Length: 137
Image (cartoon, helix red, strand yellow):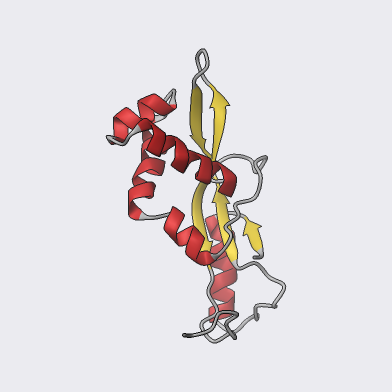
């Protein structure tokens, strides 16, 4: 799946130009846009599919991301306490976020790992009339 890292303003400018008919979207252009929090030194955000991305970015999991961004937890245990979720559940979700490139794990105090949010926004583009690779039945 094609992706592009950039600012919200860049994404907005492109989208409005397409909507006004000033440019068209080439098949080689990105289908997922990511607004990074840091300077882009992290790996790209990747999902196996749009469905996998939507599942990972569920309302329940977005609460976890918001807690990381706002609470800046110093460990996975602290994040679990902040959100009322079991530590193993939080760790499993954080690994999926890290694999997708949305969170990175930094060394904390002692053996603790500190979750850090690396992407602020993810924008999906879905072509509703493109031929599907999956059977409708």
